[in-house]
Image 1 (cartoon, rainbow, N blue to C red):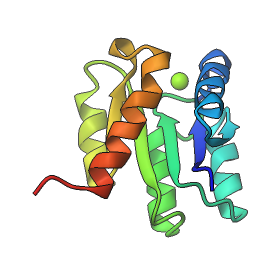
Image 2 (cartoon, rainbow, N blue to C red; image 1 turned 90 degrees about the vertical axis):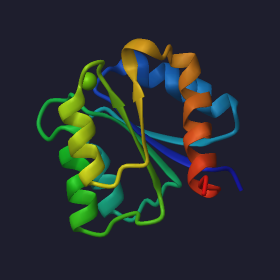
Image 3 (cartoon, protein in one colour; image 1 turned 90 degrees about the horizontal axis):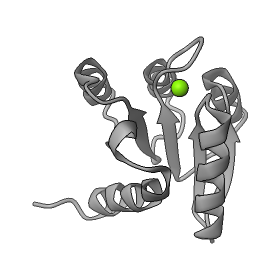
Image 4 (spheres, protein in one colour; image 1 turned 180 degrees about the horizontal axis):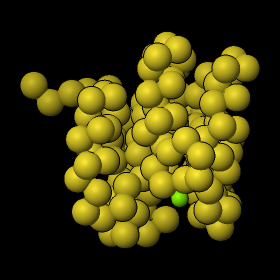
Length: 130
Ligand SMILES: [Mg+2]
């Protein structure tokens, strides 16, 4: 069964690029260009294995999206990864409180490396270093 990934980013160019990358790698990809749209998918019963979300978006930001996911106990088994901006230490602190599984710094990670980073984070969650 292909792994299901939900990608939330208001940048449509990046969304298309990520979709292509993950689809080619055999993932079952769903996207939303808004946090509200992503939340609607999850509330509607869509259960991805992985959610990759941008933080800076209009309306609810990506971390507010995760807060809603936690509050409503949506996708408790999913790996949640945030796309952060460089120097966003506040974001990292907020993300830690929400038990986010990992972060990818947008400025230093080219979109083609995002797949590799996501797989690394998933592997470390599956086999935590003791
Ligand atoms: Mg954005």
